[in-house]
Length: 147
Image 1 (tube, rainbow, N blue to C red):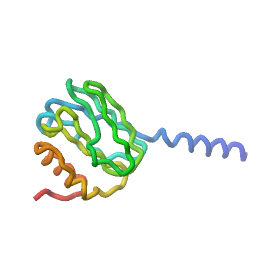
Image 2: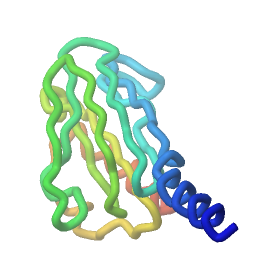
Image 3: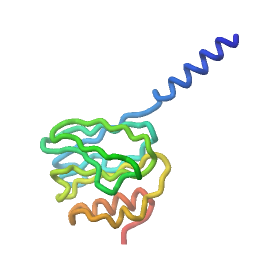
Image 4: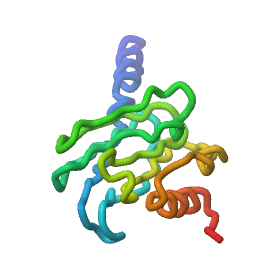
């Protein structure tokens, strides 16, 4: 009987990663919120979850925004026109951009686990057209409203 419970406990322990989810994000020329967008543009995932960025239209990629990742996270940069799947293990906020369309405001935000948005994220220099979109994402993620 002890062997049965040991096998059961080990099986459950190794099955835990199976509960991780994979979320899909489309990289689009036009979506519900206008041109050059990620859909959805905000995700709240749990540590261990993955995000698959899908090149719905050509000329897009997904990459982290310098300074908008948890401390110690190396960041990532997908290739243009290619899907990329990224795992998020570390709690915190991750600013994401499309490298060629960052200046056109193509940004998104991912919240992993329970975390507070670092205030310095609001001070990071980003292109003028991306700023209001990112501010809206920050406010939505923290329950605040923009002035």
